Image 1 (cartoon, rainbow, N blue to C red):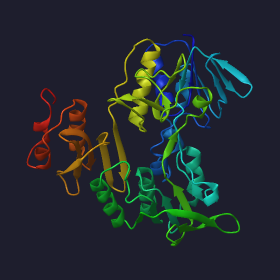
Image 2 (tube, rainbow, N blue to C red; image 1 turned 90 degrees about the vertical axis):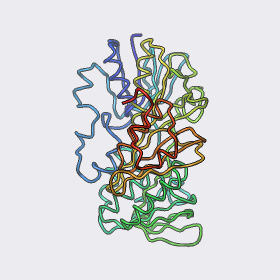
Image 3 (cartoon, rainbow, N blue to C red; image 1 turned 30 degrees about the vertical axis):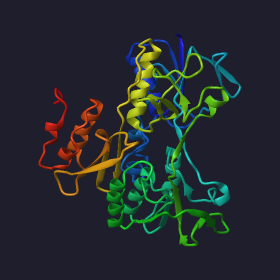
Image 4 (cartoon, one colour; image 1 turned 180 degrees about the vertical axis):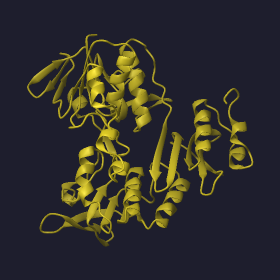
Length: 408
């Protein structure tokens, strides 16, 4: 294998390239990204970077010299226009770049509001890329009226940063409650109360009808489906993301909630692999796709090893986090399919964890300002161990005593 081409220079693509070199691969590597920057961290974009607490250089995943030192041909501001698996070629405009192995690490793209309802007005933003945040920052000023469309983690994190910075914030969620797709009513209730204490207005079960602008095309009002009208100065759209599958689909690769890969990371095309946010893979009898930094790194590391012949199935260990105001939420496992939630008070004021069960099986835990509960839960879930719910709910029971035998 003389040449590995990686399309996508985000967290997964950067991790895969670094891992290949760490594992001793000495062949040619080309890493292609359509953004102007070298690979960088996304989570701090709408927090520390937006607030000026983290400069652009510290945002980078690796120093610029890393790519040269590791003999990686890093191509930024470069868009792959087509993949030709039968010819083992990617097209970059008129250039045809051959490969022995191709890895798609194209990530995900934010969902946008349709232009027909005002999504193309000025001061309507998504906050996914460095360029997005650079465009948003000049408008991010105390006293301005911000509407956040979407009450998931992306929207709530944006709302928290804005409210803490002195903006007047309204969150609009069309579902019956915030976090409806990703968290229990108990977790949602905790964060609803947290935002209310910081002056964020949350409107649940409230659908956006359209955004309206002034003569210059700048957003000024949000008209809701129930007839209410909100005056706004800027809008952040946080209604989710979709896997970037356009290239793969056009090349005839199998698509199933992302680029479908097997347990090793192989797509339906020979010598084409995929990892990270763009890829769906088999897990626990179903096909899933995870959007997180840990998954991007772990999946990329596994695919890198398999490119070199390891034949190692990917076994995800899902965990996530969300920072809102002074509160840290840490999530272990996947809560899909739970039928009850057990609350456990934490060791300090305001700390709590919510334990998701399906029958007697522990699926996931949301730990709010409770790192000990999070770490214990991760160990239990990764070991396939489900503690007695009654013991979990009893704060007098030390979680250490509930860990599986042989786990410290």
